[in-house]
Amino acid sequence: MTTTPDQRRKGQRGAEPTADGAAGTAAGTAAEQRPPEQRAGEPHAVDAAAAEVRTPGPRRPAGAAPVPRPASVPRDLPRWVRWTVLPLLVLVPLGYVIISAQQSRESGESKQEEAAARHLRFGYYPSSLQQRVYQVPIPYGAAHVGYLETNSWDTAVLYTQFTTTAGGLDTFLAKVGTTRDALHAGASSITASQARAVNWNLSGTGPWSGITIRRAGDKPDHAIAVDLHDPDVPTVYVVSTVNFQHGFGGN
Image (cartoon, rainbow, N blue to C red; front, side, top):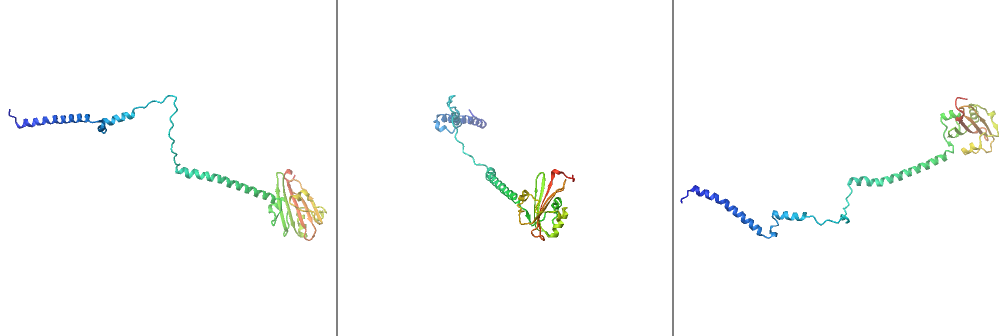
């Protein structure tokens, strides 16, 4: 039978798929015949290995002790922790030491001030306000002036000592409301307790003269002692006391 060229081309196209199918079938058969180790890289071999890994092992008995976990490796502290916490661990105790030392120093200074408060302060006049409140007008040109003021809840006391001239003594006595003739010879009028408060020694050779002036209300009381060992340069000791229990207003 005679075939045309078109029929021959159609026949060739139909025969090509058959050859490809035969080749695929032959390759599959050959792959199945290869040993397992040669098929490890194939997809179905990887799935089988994964299945073996996911296979659960034997279960532990209910009362069995838990399996200990491996100890975790300690982590390094963050940088901000090292720069914040570590300096505080050093600075806080150091701050307590500094504060304690300062308090101890202030305590010692206060004790020294308390001890010094029992002595007259020489080289300075009492302020104008103190002289007016306690009514102790120190004469102009007085020398060796010393004073000490003490206060409590009910009294305020000004201890004053100065050396002046005979005229200065008369002026002072006149301003506090008395005169030289009113002085009691041989008496200091300052009690022993008042003298001890400022370490005065009023038992010298003298002669001594003194007077006590008491006033009511807000007016201060005066205890005055005058050392007339040298009448031209007498030394005057004055204790002026304001008693708050008497009230104010001159009653």
